Length: 251
Length: 152
Image (cartoon, rainbow over all chains, first blue to last red; front, side, top):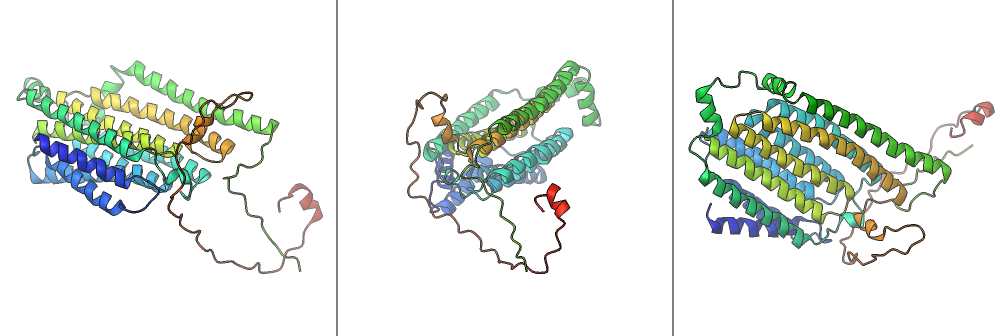
C-alpha cells in the first residue's frame, strides 16, 4: 500500500464519517455515503489478492457488508435503526468467521449476539425512546474530531499491519507445522471443544460463574430500583410516554 | 489461498470495525448507541484474534474469542439493566446528563453548555393515525368485579 493511497483513504473516510454522523442537518449525507463507499473500496482494494476469484469476491462482499453496515450503525439518527444495522454487522462478522474456518464462533456470534444481546438492546430501546426524535440523537459530540480520530487510528493500524506483513517469514507457522504433524482434523468444532474442555477447563468454569454473577447483578439492580420506587414513588419523567386513557362512551 | 493476504485482510477489517466503534463511542450521545459501538469494537477484536489464530495454526484465538463473547453477554445484561433504570429515573438516555451529577446537598460542579441545541433539523412529524370512534354497546358492569378489577 503506497503512502499516498493510505493518506487519501484516511482523508476520504474522515470526511465521509463527518458528513454521515448526525450534525443537526440533513445536508451532505448522500455525499458522505458516496465518499464512504469510495474510501471503503480504496481500503479493500489495497489489500493483496487472496488467490482465487471466488474467495476474493466472497471476502470483499463480506467485508463490505460488515463495514458498510457498521458505518450505518454508528451514523443513523434513530437508535432502533442503529440496532438493526448492527445486526447486519453481526451477520457479516459471522460470515467472515465462517470464511476463516471458525464455524462454532460464527454460529455463536449469531446466536449470542444477534439472538440475545441485540434483542435485549431492542427491548430496552422500545421501552425507552423508539422514535429517535430526541435532540440528543440528532446531534453528535464533536463529529469532525471523532471521525478524524477513528480514521487516523485505522490508518495507523493498517500501516502497522502492512509493515508487519513485510517482515513476516515466507511460510506461516501454521503451514510450517502442517508439514511436520497432522493437520488439526476434519471437524474444527470438535477440535475447539477438546481444546476448550482440556486446557481451558478452569477458565470455562470461571466464565460460567461470571455469567451467573452478572445475572444476579442485573436482577439486583432492577430489584433495588423497584424497592426504592415503592418507598418514594416519583412522578413520571417528562420524556416518558403516558399510557393513553381508554375511552368508552356510556349510552 | 494466500495465507498472508488472508491474515492481512482480517486484521484490516477488524481494525476498521474498531475504528468505527471508536467513532460511534466518541460521537454519539445516546447511551444505548454508545454501548452498541463498544460491542462493535469487540467484534473487530474477535476478527483480529481469529485471524491470528489461523496464522499460527492453533485454536487459542478462537478460545479467547469465546471468552470475549461470554464477557460481552455479561456486560450486556448489566448495562441494559442500568440503562433502563437510568431512563426510568431521568426520562432520557442522554449522556450529557452526567455533566450534572452531584450529591443531594451539593451544587453541580461541572455545568457547561455542552452542545448548542439550535439549528436542529425539524423532526419528522408524528404520523397521523386514523381516529376510530368507539362502537358497539358497553357491556353490563358487574359491581362486584369492579371492586377487584378496577382497571376494567
